[in-house]
Amino acid sequence: MPGQPLSDLEVRPRATAPPREIVTYEGPYAAGTIVVSTGERRLYFILPGNQAMKYGIGVGRPGFEWAGTSKVSMKREWPSWAPSAQMRRRRPDLPRFMRGGPDNPLGARAMYLSRTLYRIHGSNEPQTIGRAVSSGCIRMTNEDVIDLYERVSVGARVIVSR
Image (tube, rainbow, N blue to C red):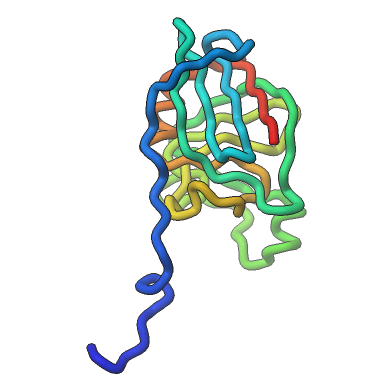
């Protein structure tokens, strides 16, 4: 209606994740490896034949960035979520536990990274893809995380670089 203020959702630009695509890969990692470039905000799943599937991602906000090597230790469809004690201290409004489903922040799929509290997971906030807003997890659209989930094996190597 004319004269009424617009809501935040109506004036906030909507981010759209770049479409996943197959790209040429000339790097040192073997097929089946996940390579995350947090600076580029892209995840590459290395395919045979010098190719990789490239996805847009959301990454850790300032103070929550990290880099290192891990492995996919577990995979879950529509995972439940229990925020860490540290996360709940920062955000007391968070629930202690949330069952998996469309409203869950972990989205449609999650791949847990061994020796860390981090995951590669979907998101119920697709507008955050391409941004640095997480507590260190790698976020993907639900469509992309389902695609990656089907390709990745438990035990897959994960390289995260800044």
